[in-house]
Image (cartoon, rainbow, N blue to C red):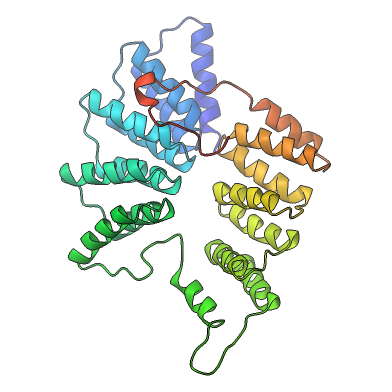
Length: 325
């Protein structure tokens, strides 16, 4: 877990001693950082290798792109993939999948569709789950023509569309159907029905089900309360789904639902873990605006993360708008 620190420490010592770093030293440090989830450090070292005249291997690019995917850095995932192609390196299926996943989960449907098509032209074989993620990204962006076209391709390959989008379960439709007229009987779900389902899912680690139930509850005109939101946010942060947790906080603010300080702290900690200090800082500001007490240790942790991000090359910056400001 701390291999990346040792690797960066060794690199720093070699620089102080004015020892010229070779491709092996850089490669070892990049592998250690990327495999520990420290995408930013891996990217910086990768760029340094290029400046020194070394050509990073496809393996180094792969682990860095996968780290960018895990950290929700879709811009860098796509940018590094393009850099590989410019260097003449082979982009394998794992790299395509990581970049497509990063774009799909962050709403970049156009990049996801383009990379999916590119992967297939290169001889890759995307599976049903990858198609489902891209379909989900298109549907959430209201790009129904593309969603239907991709769904038809799935059907042509004999894939079942039922429950294809992993981010939304068809079981929620069944839950909501209980509250719909059926013949002469209507069963209305109460607040307690939804609440009990959310609590049961969250306590058993089923964050997706908890989130979908909360959404279904809100569609029935029940916004929920801060306590219930906190339970779902906690489940998301435990599953390392920091983006969903941030979206829930944003929804609570729009709905004027009060959220506790510990709930904010969980999300801030998750953002820092994924090196999104910009979002963590914004959440600190939100806590101050809400008059919530801020833990001094957490506040200092956010400050310590306020270092410069490596700058995206201009050629790779197209449409690289942040999902969160």
